[in-house]
Image 1: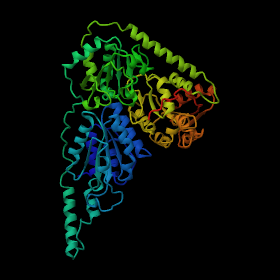
Image 2 (image 1 turned 60 degrees about the vertical axis):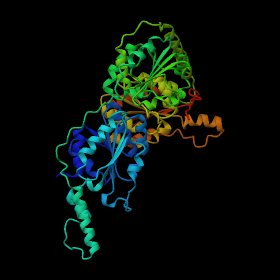
Image 3 (image 1 turned 180 degrees about the horizontal axis):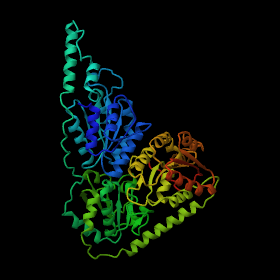
Image 4 (image 1 turned 30 degrees about the vertical axis):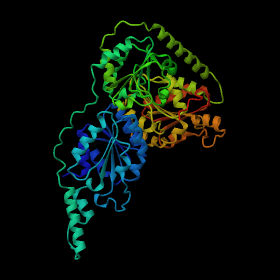
Length: 580
């Protein structure tokens, strides 16, 4: 019989896993060796958070549960923030965590903590593999739970004595041979207990054929009776607004149908989070600026997978008299902060697709409404251009974002990891396609970039992957250029280097009169890339910027990861926009 690690790998392969992310450890070594044996790509990174972020991004880009494997104790605890980020982003991540031997649990063994208790509040399901009988049932259930309903992460604890070969485990427990049988009653009792314990561990032949995982209902279902009601509300509106959020993008298979449905509905639309790029680079119904003004004036607001959280000022930014239609998979999520007038419990993408097939009753012309929103759009574009023309010592961040947008290929995937610089980019850099923009999500976690970029390039190897880093956020992941080089993953990272945590600095100085803890240096981050075997470029004047971006594109085309360190000035472009 194969060891437990090999069996886990075999089942993962059976379930469609092609790649897993990890930081090695003795507790999990059999899983990694088994994965290689079963042609699952093992991508070993330099810190556990990166492994989780990479699995998170892979799940978002494919809609299929993705796997990370971390070792016991510190490996498991190092993953906590990244798993919480996946939970809030509704990503189906399977985390396999190593653990101490089953007989030593709670006895003070190295790295023995209550891992299930630690994860219980931040994942959909926690469970433990206790014997070789558990592998198939537990992993099939983990994949089903992670993907069904509202997707999210699952934690599976894998004790080390369930993973290694039975002969080795019996040697560990001293229960293989009785060459020197104990003479005391206590010694005999312990020996009997250990032998029985190992017998129980290996009670099943884990290599039996797995039963297929049951069908997964990805949608909450659609109440067909509510579709005419929603259609009627829209048809009566003179100033409707459609907001499409990340929950509408949970299944990439729906991308084309969802985009077609949104165009068929023909409403002014604002795309948020993972929905950025749904309608391509430019579309006449896709608006990017002054969303709050539109919501303030709207008479019908459709929230498709978009909660009324801080991003919408907890619902206060929406016209008090507007009819709010909330479409979400979980009904309780539609009730927070402001009660919607029409609550739809369904997968937002599936509902919009169904709604678009209901003929529109001739209603009020929306031409004047579109014209007003277009004027808001042009007003903000003029402001952006004015900011881009401000000259300083180094590079203007608004101008930098415009140059990046101009340089990107049509197949580019954009990763955002930072505060002020990435938020600035969100106004200017335009995703070209669905699932071409990845950011942390509502948890706002810094440090996602290295793992997200890694995953994006592995899932879409022919696409340009642009990792937009703030210089603060870059500190979390620069070491992963070593990973990019070892695994031949060519990405373009651009660091907006303004020598500080500017999003915090700006308001902290204004409100508290002190910049303590917010200042960095115009450090030579490009040297880090060079030292790790990649290529670093430094840009300290506007005249060098276009040339550097062209060189970066050529380098990744030749399979070389590249980091472009752009020294920036600070601007007032986003003054007063910090969320707390």
